[in-house]
Image (cartoon, rainbow, N blue to C red; front, side, top):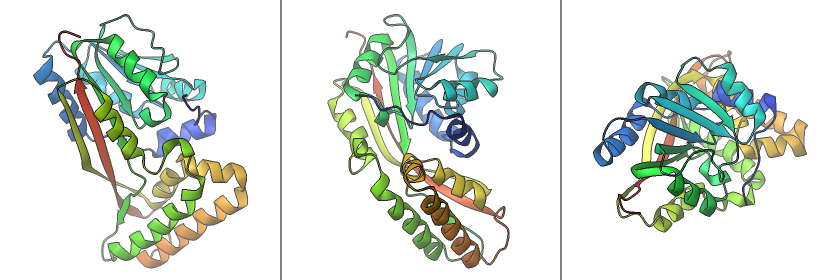
Length: 275
């Protein structure tokens, strides 16, 4: 079954504000894979589980048309609020029932969303809508992000960050199993296409205020689960982690800029010409 999360307007807005989208280099790896298999023109890309649209907009300059889909009305509403590119549209629908004709889509992506789908049904649906030689790209990143700050020991900083992640572990959805990476690896093994690729370590670095790093962790489903169960405990945890990081950095402002490194992994697969 698919899981429905991230559906409140406040949480959807936090996605747009804090989530780290794939880098240009990461998107280029996806497009290079598609170009070598299918070639131009790039007509239609569909970004499934698009959330507030950070990943969707990255595809706009490469395709004639891009459609972002999400089950959450609040996420689609936030995506529409930030929609500027004329070739992007958004549709509310479930990932397992896409409103596209058979063999009509050049690229199907899911960026940090596939693990919430009914995975076998979604893979069947992606197969249905993809053109021959069209490609599927499933991207995600781990919660084990790393901080760095000038003149501060990164190891010490990240020990505190690891405590943050460990405190949230009991609130992690059982749907995700021990590791979301394993779910993607299982999908990679299950996809019958002969032409596919698996990468499990692509670092994406972003400068951001420390407050945004805290907001990023707070946008994760495990923190949101803790927030629902015990708002005081959740707030105290974030505040304590933030204060300890500021102390190590020897700064007094939560708006001090840090560098956050996120570990992406992905699978790419090309639908055969005869399928």
